[in-house]
Length: 119
Image: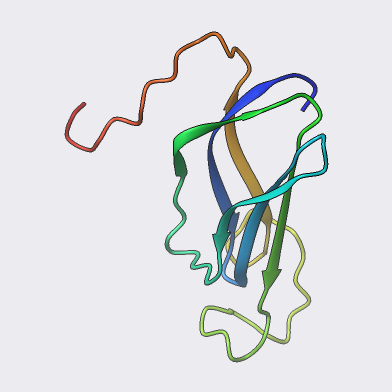
């Protein structure tokens, strides 16, 4: 990060061949912290993970994201295991995007996530 920010949430995104995804923080002092593991990614269940307690990220913190794909015939969601897969926006293509929400005004109070039905 180029300046101090507050991390609010994450959204792992892949298509049919997505297998797993992990988000890690690397702090300026070298400390590494895994903040989200999705060991059995399911492209039908792509959720935003809003943090119950936002995380302060000091300037210089890095967010790393690692994901794996399963392009085998054993993956029942794989539309064609013989196809060379390229990046694309269609679900028969593939992508790996590690979205995250943050804000850069640490003096602004963050309200907790509103529970369903409270809106």
